[in-house]
Image 1: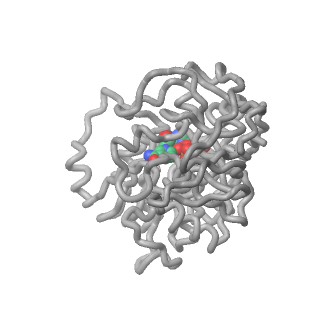
Image 2 (image 1 turned 135 degrees about the vertical axis):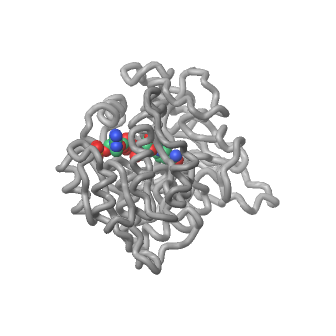
Image 3 (image 1 turned 90 degrees about the vertical axis):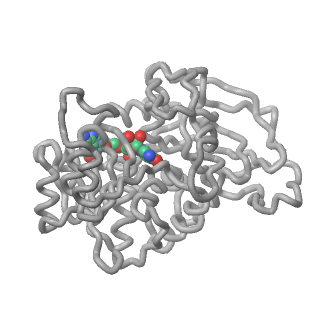
Length: 369
Ligand SMILES: NC(=O)c1ccc[n+]([C@@H]2O[C@H](COP(=O)([O-])OP(=O)(O)OC[C@H]3O[C@@H](n4cnc5c(N)ncnc54)[C@H](OP(=O)(O)O)[C@@H]3O)[C@@H](O)[C@H]2O)c1
């Protein structure tokens, strides 16, 4: 059973800025039926976590805007230290965990399979649910997946959001990669060298795709090429990077674009996507709103022009994470790129480094215990 004499150490935010992230302690929770207590070993940060801490994560209508103290972050690797009372016989779908099992969290705890729903949006870790930047947390048994043995805690903590989002973007119809990039070797365009894009680079190369990646930094492009990227384009110096993408694809365009930029990048993506290609709409690091002064062709026309599919992505379900993505990672020996590891007491520094330093490449991790 849980050692209730111990206190849980945690970071909390009121959504009032990265400087105001603070440390506190809380009573040790006890797992109930179909629940387990996890000792958290490592937590990786996502762009979303910085938004939550700054009070800027407010574009999902179904998630409360209330800013009460909240433990941030959703992605962790840890070890089960206590299992709740025996599970109901009729709940055979719930995983049967044991003390000592190494586990990884899933972002939306209730999203087990298929299409995400409005109700699932209330089950995201690190807002609206209490997050994982703490030493212990109780999880429902179904909110965890088994950690592959070959990954370190830090590496495994990088997978729940960034890697699964990349996976769902590259294989939106569940078409399992065959290692040869499909019948026609597909070209993937990745924007920037953050968590999602670097995970996508690793997955796409293991799947046999051709990868074009953009970055604000030549050094980062060099690192991306060392990871297998076929072409790098500096979006700072090459402002019309969509033209370069067309040139690099013999004027065909990219078959799949992982659109993490948003306001400043989507229209350029629509100019360099292949006929019949897919733009996975993921993020908004360059802004959530278009500049008011811009007059441009209507989205309907832009999409029909090249017969494009715009596919909104909201991470992905547990069964794809566990049943498709993790086996693919293991088979191909993919190790997530951990750029920098901070100690638990340096939690605030980790957020500031992730958001403000401009140095990020891949993932930032906080070592918890
Ligand atoms: N929909 C979903 O399910 C989902 C899941 C995960 C993330 N997201 C969203 O996707 C976005 C990326 O997330 P992340 O965790 O990968 O972020 P991240 O690790 O913080 O990486 C952000 C990267 O974006 C690049 N960037 C910044 N401005 C850019 C621009 N104008 N054009 C191209 N690239 C630019 C930068 O790369 P360089 O330094 O190389 O320039 C930066 O490192 C965020 O908006 C996040 O909220 C959505």
